[in-house]
Length: 436
Image 1: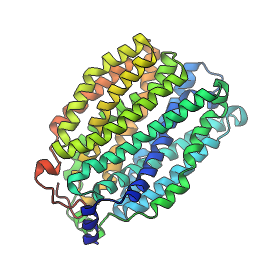
Image 2: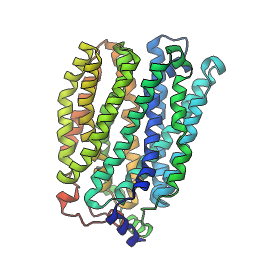
Image 3: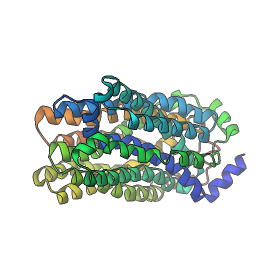
Image 4: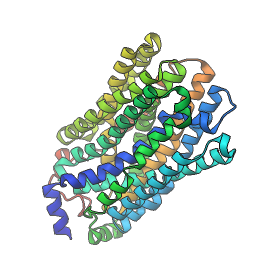
């Protein structure tokens, strides 16, 4: 078993296996982010009879409900990935995501079934959160364990690129639907089409994941577990939460750009959805570049430099968007911020994975990531919308983002380097033991 895993690492993953992991990863984020992009329309469907701001806040609160169950999914499905294998954990999380995706897209409106509509929406969002919380750990660890040690950054970048590729897909769907349908039709059924398009690839994703080779070496994992108590790894968890909190807040602030442009700045929906396409496209390129750079120069500099630059750029970027309120300003600012976000955010999960032994990786990543997302990601868009309504200041997202980035940069400067190119351990085996 060990020799088979080492041989796979030396060769790298076949393209079809990368595609199998990527399909599920992309759908998970397409599903979760589509709700954010159609927050206004979903609010009109499930929370009628309120003023526009209240409906948006209720819709975003329902969006946030999905974050509450992420830590539980990270713990349950993530630990399953450490005990019985990465592959069965990924199949389970993807199946649950498909159920939740269909459920929310087919839930009738408040006008049809009354209070049961928002209740069902919340329950399906919570199931989505549980599934996505369980998806992150096994898929992240799978790609890194299957990679040659000196190319872990690039493989991790592939995983991040599929997530951000789903942002592009969701944005393209949003642009097409908002262009082809009237506002009334978009409220009535347009947003449902976006969810059902994602659901259509669930059967193919499940079939693809069944063909994956397992990367967890059970014998090595059991040995590692016997000698890897949790307490020594608590600093990794604490720093990991701070790092991912900064990334999460800045990322979800960017994902809110569509709603921000449409609701706060009153820009046309097609232009607002266009920002999503710009953000996703530039982040995909930045994710791949980040992986290559982190393999070459290490994890720390690739985290610190872009996030420090983003912290300084946040206020001027939002100031330009709010002042000009044109497509050019919106797209240019979104592109600049998304490149920095993609460059700096990629190495974070890689640093956590390299800092943990195999027996704790899947569950550790799942819990650390999900706690950060639940506490900070689930509240970011709601807090931004509430603060804008409270202060009337359209620059609120910039201040919120800059504060989070400052905390992240401080944490980045304090952690140790884990990249094999910097530690001199390029010959280590990711699945066979904790050597970097």
